[in-house]
Length: 349
Ligand code: MAN
Image (cartoon, rainbow, N blue to C red; front, side):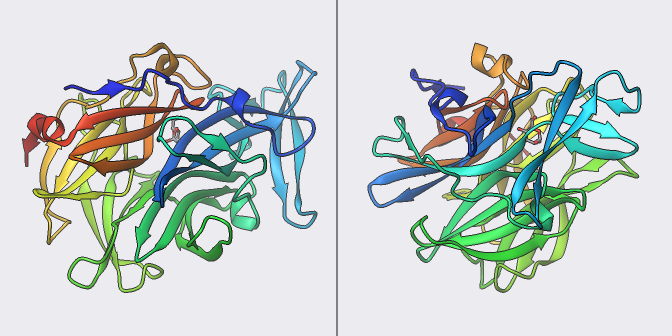
């Protein structure tokens, strides 16, 4: 595999971004969506921040208060055995999960795809009861000049997927929840196939422990049905515990190419590929037995949550995949992989 990481990696890090408010610090800028907008490459970067905390005895959760229209903090004592802190991303208390940071989306613009100017203010921020714990991991699908942004909305109601659209990344129209909890990693195909829209999605079944990728269809991008199970996790392989769609699929000569993430028993997140049938995308033609991108660089192995490469956006140009990806839940990075190299590694299904 001839993947080439950008020499300037990481392209964006926490120090490049201003917190959304006084008293907060940025802990991660990662998992961006990407789109071409005229001569520019634009990213919608997930920015995770938390209140500065000088008290070593408590961990603070930041929560968007819908009534007050602002972020409030809630302290959790470190020495209270009812509070669980084993995952640095979470606080668990009495069966309720809270997050140790709250995320919003921030626009970054570039003319060369490598050097980005980042807005000073959040572009899309938590705004309602479905988003009180933050908004995460956006994807962008462009159809007929409209950019459909779909992101993960987190709240005590669960993990859902919300759709927002824009033509110019200045004004945004909200379309509400398109996949109810527990469902994330939604990636909408860039246009209808035989008159019908398709999306990959990842429902979660706590009872049976399933974290698989499904395919849904829609007449209008807003109402989704005809759900079909697409692929599952594979014991003993790189994607044995959790999988989810990454960037929206791209059309290549051979069908639809999808780059997805998989986590193993050690919580190592790698990227692999799926080739789906051009006309019947619920038919899997080939899949990666080995990942195409593995966390190896120092910035991928250490950070807020190490050993993670996670993509939500790529450009496919000149038969090259130009991947934008989050490294260690901390930074935005870039790598390029020729499409034929990806296809050569796939195993037929
Ligand atoms: C989950 C999501 C992602 C994150 C990975 C790794 O899948 O929360 O946003 O990058 O875990 O922590």
